Length: 398
Ligand SMILES: Cc1cc2nc3c(=O)[nH]c(=O)nc-3n(C[C@H](O)[C@H](O)[C@H](O)COP(=O)(O)OP(=O)(O)OC[C@H]3O[C@@H](n4cnc5c(N)ncnc54)[C@H](O)[C@@H]3O)c2cc1C
Picture (tube, rainbow, N blue to C red):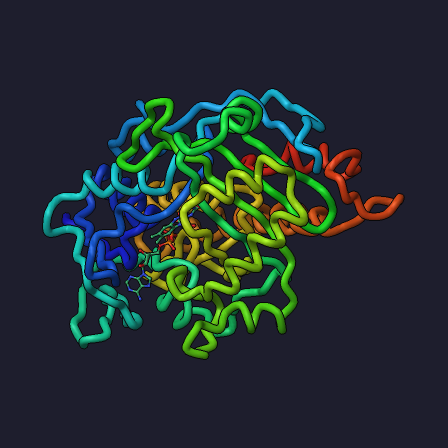
């Protein structure tokens, strides 16, 4: 008996869902809104053992997956080392994982330029409805269409992103352009700067084309900075005066906004991070939101990855959570009729997503919370630092 699925969204979550179902004999089509390949975009991601195992299970490889870091080093405002925790981890890039999984999908089963508007279903099957009126029918529909999911908007219209009160600036600096002292003190490490009110996370990743050769890699720069709603409204306004909702495409971020961020960096950050930022490609910011759907299913329709839940990025779990959702979906769909399977999937994964979201909120709150002796301005002696160093970009304990 053929079992068919349509997956809406061809990013990492959708690819994991499709590949793990195909391994179990399902006939799966991915429909992706973008008309051109997604590969070549994105920045750094951290990996976890469970993600590595699922890459292999999906048919990929963890050979040359990324750059191995041995420890986490927190720096003070003066640039010197403030704390160190041995913590071996492989850090990679979104593009490395996406392009590997993308190459595993057969021609014709990954359809570009198909924006989905919603879905219909009855006892016998389901279908997605596209903006141009086309439909794709299957036994099950998986909404892996990300943070602003059209599938979730129909399933749970009341679920809206919750603004955290801060945003993240991201940038990538070529290893070959970094000064020798920064290469020695900072580049090899998962680095942090942890005063009260702002935060830096940085780590080395592959260069363009997954180039892992020393001298050809890049440093991934992640910098959290508070912005109240009025400030955010201004930051989201482009040079032609158009105010963007939720987030702004990086090329439309105004030059004066970028220049102001660079000036703030000089005022607030340790010298090596100022130096990294000065040599980076044009930095861009993303406001930080989260959301959690009350359930991840409706009959024959499932939500997975960022469509189901976005946790703030402190936990570094976006890709891993999407992969684990995909694994659970495939396991349940293999074992029971669709509606029963999806109910079991939702019962398993929604509480896990809640736990991930709550830990990431806690890490975000600690970033902004002064200790009993007041704000930590120099990145040394922050009473919240030990918890943040040990729990950032870590899979929460069950
Ligand atoms: C281009 C890109 C670059 C990224 N870079 C990074 C990074 O560097 N670091 C990081 O931690 N995370 C990154 N992410 C996010 C990361 O992929 C997710 O947080 C996580 O992997 C969960 O993935 P997801 O597949 O559930 O959602 P997403 O990655 O958000 O993917 C959703 C997909 O659905 C598609 N889509 C949206 N709406 C529709 C629709 N109506 N019809 C059809 N398709 C639709 C989108 O185009 C996208 O491909 C990136 C995402 C994208 C799309």
